[in-house]
Length: 522
Image (cartoon, rainbow, N blue to C red; front, side):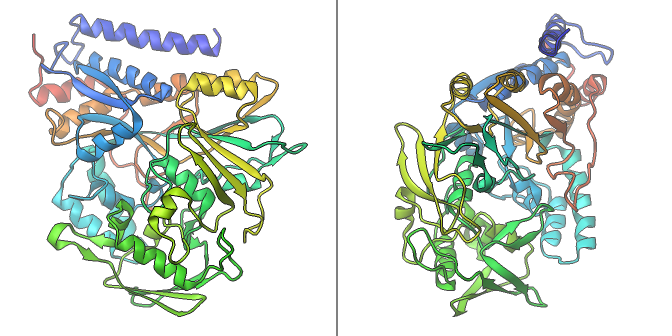
């Protein structure tokens, strides 16, 4: 049996098991076929074929333990808006970048945090996360984050599914492909094309960016463009520690209340202006005065209790920036990573239309009707000029269209999540294409709205976790292009711990549901 046949057989087996469950076979734990009068609605990104397929398998596996589930496909940006407003019961998602730092647990799970889309609240967890974010003792911080992950894994406000490997399809003549573990798109600066490239080098986004204003864009596509056009003061290295980007040195004071950044010399914006501390001050002050979601990271509390973390920003000379904090916070450096530096006086309205940064590629034009952003190499880039001189970033929502464009030569490189796993195997057989697999740490997850019945009961969420055969999905559906995840944090993180592990155990899932009083309805 070939790999594709085995995969089809695996899906068929799951569907057959689901039909058996629907016919009333409660299984050894004794539950009836349907335990809830109304199905749980699982909302997924309509444009992602892989998501729709694994969601279908999850739907079938939940039915096997008596949990009725309906799948609703939603346009991506609409889905994001619904998640922010809590207009869902159960949804899928994929964290890009943020899950690499334990500080992010504070944004995801603390009561009232802006990324806490499931409305989860646990005072004990709040206390642990508040202490962890304010301690600079890594040994103590690891203890706190270990305890936090144990609580999160027990209460299951989110269920990590798997870490996704980074699959790249490129034309055969594309060389020097080295995708970093965090997937930062600045690797495109080093890409070369054997024999050169007459027209633009075309890469793909799987969803439209929310905005070209990088101070406001927080979706994955907006972040990809930010990485190409901008630099930040701080970036993450391969170990997910914070190091300088436009800052050549970062010097925290002994009390953790002052950060002094020595800026790289010789850095210029795309408009030719030299980058100085005045630009950095202007960028940060513009962000802090806005209602951008990125600004939330520099404040604590909400409403009348909202207090700024940054007390003062000073520029003693053109190459030195000093930021004074109101209190110690480990979150400060991480919050700077997605904030690209922009020229003093350049407004956010201007950035929406024609962004100007210091990054490896310069903005040329944005054709919204064609879903295309054209960029040009920044030959004066402080990190070295890109080999590709014209870069075109296209949004292609449909996976079949993307596959056809790859085969016809309309696309030079695709590193996306909306192709089926077996599509990569098929594309690898094309003599004009190459498929490469790189380790990844971005995590795919299920997000529960814990205020929505019946998911407000953590036992129901635990049962769902036991009911899903993640290992089988990774092996047979994803074809080994991912690894099962037991924490939002990647295993490479210094703060990682698996907490409570949910191996596939449908009998245990049924038992938990029975104990929770969900023994079935006729």
